[in-house]
Amino acid sequence: MKRIFSSWNLAAVHHAKNLLEVEGIRARVRNELISSGIGQLPPIECQIELWVVDDANAERAERILRLGTLRPEERGRLWRCAGCGEVSEAQFTQCWRCGAFRSD
Image (cartoon, rainbow, N blue to C red; front, side):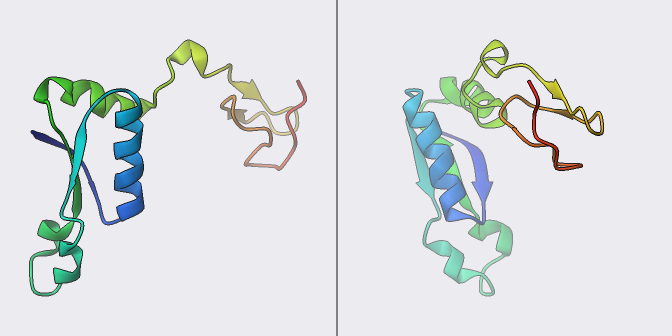
């Protein structure tokens, strides 16, 4: 088994586990209950961890967590805001900088 992700946020670790399991990668969560030991144990030892069961899946699992499950061609095209020229990813319908809505 190989550790591929850790966080203080239990929901984030379980979300990552769910993402991997949808892709057929078995994973286990460790240290779920040890976070209450902060103060008595070193904080770094109390993070919640996600481990892949099969080391051969570790690289693919890390890529999924870093880039998501969609291939670049499935993510959609970038778009440029007509108001300020800011470039945003396809999933956004409003510019974060000036608030203008996507016009395409």
